[in-house]
Length: 313
Image 1 (cartoon, rainbow, N blue to C red):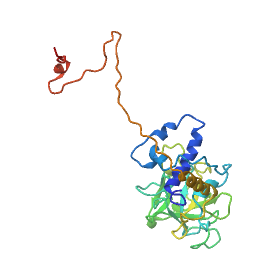
Image 2 (image 1 turned 90 degrees about the horizontal axis):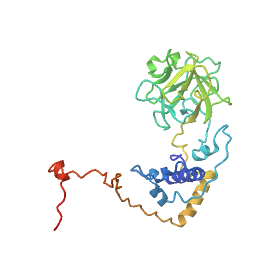
Image 3 (image 1 turned 180 degrees about the vertical axis):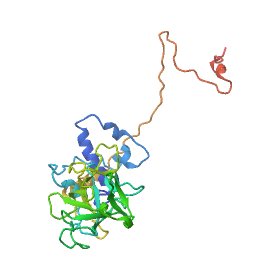
Image 4 (image 1 turned 30 degrees about the vertical axis):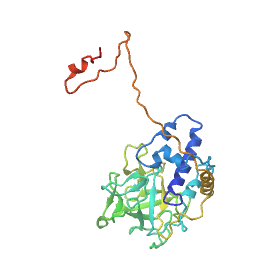
């Protein structure tokens, strides 16, 4: 959301509002807001409070029944003007756990991060072995049932081996192992944020991620179309199509900015810093003798440390 229509401070404010509303109904989680480290304002309660992130009232989020596109996601990350995905367009494939398929650092195709960078970007190419009865060319819309190929940033293609491993292969050895049959859920054409399933043409198995979290690699071992095989296709916008920060915000973002402006009109006071004083505990035994370890004198040895201090007459 940050690289689209929200500033960093606005993202922290929205996150704080939702978390404070949730934690008001539960006791766990409060320690997070009292923890501070050297990773910036996101991990510093006092700095977040000082910039006003904690002073915005709870935000009413748009309702969602879990079916289709989350309306809050559309507000935070607006869709491109042209949502249809064509051959030659770049896409990102997001798995059910929020991480995107990536190529880089090895022959295996993995799903390691939620980033949308060069390693996660794939270009949709038409297969040379496609036999759908229609001519497919560049800039033509991708449709349900098409046989496609995914070209990574390094020019390699996503391929499926006979053992079910999803790997990257150079263009020189491109064969039917790189052919993927596309199934678009609920649509005849592929649009931004459509749910898709990719089935290998050579093995008839569907690409999937490991839902148990034990393996970050992508595999194609089953012909199921379940949660592990479900991907969301996100169209990679060009710089011209990318929405600016000053674009028309959604209702939630507009309300966030309004309440932030109202709360910042009265500058919040900075909470006093707590001074930590190390007060050692005095442990005593049954005979009232102190159980604290004796102080050691490293210059004269332990025996010198145990000698009694001289007292005045």
